[in-house]
Length: 190
Image (cartoon, rainbow, N blue to C red; front, top):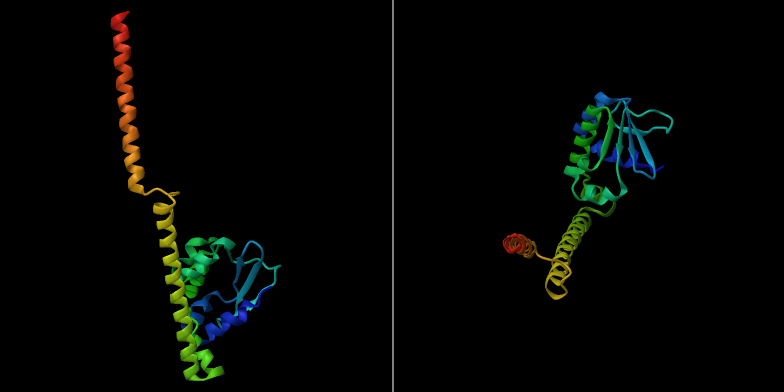
């Protein structure tokens, strides 16, 4: 089992509002089902989390597909739109609210280990690397789209599909009119 409770508790210890939100659910258990494994966490009387045994019945189960984890990490505000929830809706809403708004102050934690200046530089570097990765990803997508549309046409622009669809419809209508004319001529001849 992944020891996730200490990490989350580290974040909760810095945010009293989050612990206060969890307090009404003290004693409740949430199960995070990741298809290949389950993590069960119990809300303690202090609003912090503790690991719960696999034999206890959770008040809420949050089913997450492993394939959706990158989407969840990319857009935490919409994370709960990618999951399936069973159980106590109010508890699930509280978990959603806390997970969307709980932030790790990396700079603060790193400053304890490396000092303030190094922490600021490390966080700045991490942000710059992340931004560069996002920009590179966007450029690669644009270049691939251009390549498959222009140089090695494996994709078709929507405008071209619409034009083709219009031409096919026009041709179909013309063929139907021609068939009716031929039938009319055959009736007149025979």
